[in-house]
Image (cartoon, rainbow, N blue to C red; front, top):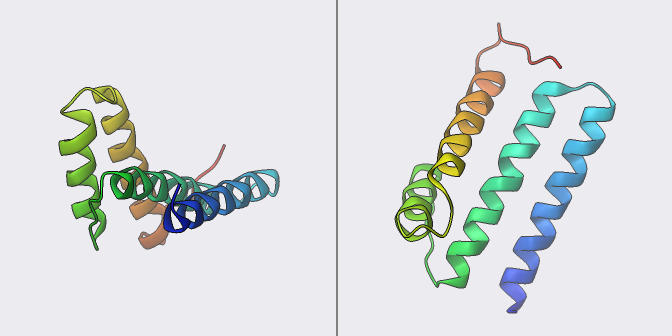
Length: 102
């Protein structure tokens, strides 16, 4: 495992730990944000293993779909779950009238 991949995995683990902490504190908007970035960083890591990178969220999503979902390394429903999580994060981060709850 390369040092870069190791650092990416460590970062995703920190995001996950943060999501768990926020969940205990009932800060559900923050949970959604941290959960999304946990998954997003894991996707970037998987792409990095294949020596593929992207600088944008949409680019990362598209590359992940092309190299993993379209090739049946992940099931299509996982791609849909990612889309739902991305949309939830967008809403809770940028729409000030939306609050996540349990």
